[in-house]
Length: 586
Ligand SMILES: *[C@@H]1O[C@H](CO)[C@@H](O)[C@H](O)[C@H]1NC(C)=O
Ligand SMILES: *[C@@H]1O[C@H](CO)[C@@H](O)[C@H](O)[C@H]1NC(C)=O
Image (cartoon, rainbow, N blue to C red; front, side):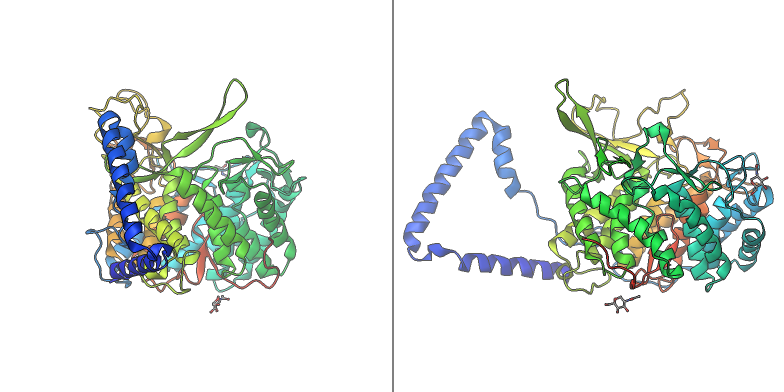
């Protein structure tokens, strides 16, 4: 049905074009002329084909490349019936997994920032004590899963033990998305328990001084006890674009709750600075200078230090109920850049993936950009994000069906939706490993990459993984959520069981290879090696994101609908609202 709609529109467009052609006055002459032209063209191409087949093919191949047909889910894979009811056994399996993770942490390391499930120990981010990294990051998942007793104990710890009066260097971005974000969604989901808002405000006030730079871009680190921003000497004092531009949902929601404009202004100013120094392509380099607010010559990518910049452009537009058009403009601009410059197709199977652009300076000082076919697992958030963007800024009618019909989306909307669907497929293909888990970083094959073609059957590979040597960083799975996050969004926007099946397969691999019998879950050092070797760490995002998105994937879709909630980059949901304070900048 939807395919017909698209074809019909194309026909209409064609019909319009022909009737509008001015050459109808002398039809015979114009048809003779075009026959001659056609003959010349055929002759030229024939000639070229003899002497330079490559050039000839480049000329005619666009006419033979099939146009994409509208399939809102991968053809022949998806089940067409939309079913949003809960899959109770699978949902409950994710709750069991959460309890297995949480109860071990509680037993061994309650209150510590991080958990090491194999040595049964906890550790803190600074010598001066924890800041509730794991507890606060996990509590809203407990609310969703109706784990009332666990949530009650976590609340008790927050009420009696949690303190932000800690010396040490804390990462501004991580502290904001995990701890501030966790407190704010706990406040909302608990039915406005004032404890969480009080703690959130205390933390935010300690973070605020990071914005006191000449440009307004935040410093990367903060000493919470001294209320002082600290610049990141490891990166020459520069700040990551993603880190500077992924604080806004949290500070703006806090502003709404407290009625204090300062949080809003500081967070919004960052976006204004970024817009002011934007690169012509709509893309953003991964580092900025907090002194002058300009981009620093550095890589452009959707992976680490770039990822959530793009995510929050869209989500800021969604958070204030589409009332700030500046974010729509910035997002659309960015997507044009990404789709034009970063999105590629793999050689053999035609998988859609994203590359990175690496700047290189020649001897003469000229800068050129090298396209590198490296994709972080982090990029797997982008499939779902593209689909969400497609029905938001790419909606032609204001209302979009589930799944969207072709005539409900603009050209850009259709382009982004299809790219999102394909990127999720690619991320699923990167789970074709011995464990069914995907590695931290994959490289895609390109011509002349120096890899022996006979050995490499796949379109992608893990760089530097050699038998007998300790696996490289690239080969790990550290319990990351990005693929299941995209599956959750894709399911909510299509109602297609395919995405639940994909999520279940990943969950089963996690159960099989990451679960530690005595409690907790651990990272795997090489996803392509069985039996697995573990790394003694359970990242906090496993309980706050990975298990939450899996749970919500199998939960009834009426719970936390995407029309009413926006998830921060750590999977903490905030309600969408209409701002009374400001309506964006331009
Ligand atoms: C972490 O900090 C807390 C204080 O919040 C302290 O009680 C705990 O002992 C510390 N844990 C470790 C492993 O040092
Ligand atoms: C968002 O906008 C829509 C349409 O304008 C409106 O129906 C809805 O109530 C708004 N939601 C909020 C939370 O303001």
